[in-house]
Length: 167
Image 1: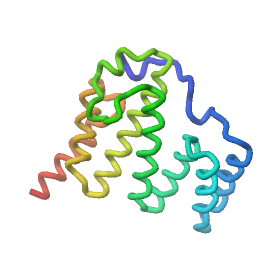
Image 2: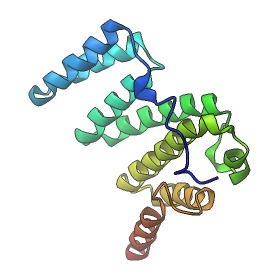
Image 3: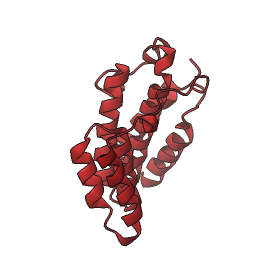
């Protein structure tokens, strides 16, 4: 299945959260410059812990604050939610091309979101110098995505070069 040939439906950001949660996310975006955006984002998370809008906002906040461990926790939470939606194995290491090729086409948007989220997790591990785990994630993504639509191949090569320079 070509990961670029799909109808974009069921996009996470098209799912509306409660007005309260939307206002908290909006508030956080306005407060980002002052450094006080975390509180409204955490309040939004407490109100909607399974909202991908909230999780993406929190992940971005932590990433841009260089709080990679927190960004990783949020990305892993998002991956678990998406995994449940698409019916993938609990462990990404067990994910095979068959899981993707046999999935209903209407789930392809969520499958891409899963794969991009896994790529993000691999990238965070790479930034945190967990190179072996990062390499494993990128190897799995390259195996799953033969046409490199997700773009993990260049990251795998970067990790491999980093490992060589450490050796």
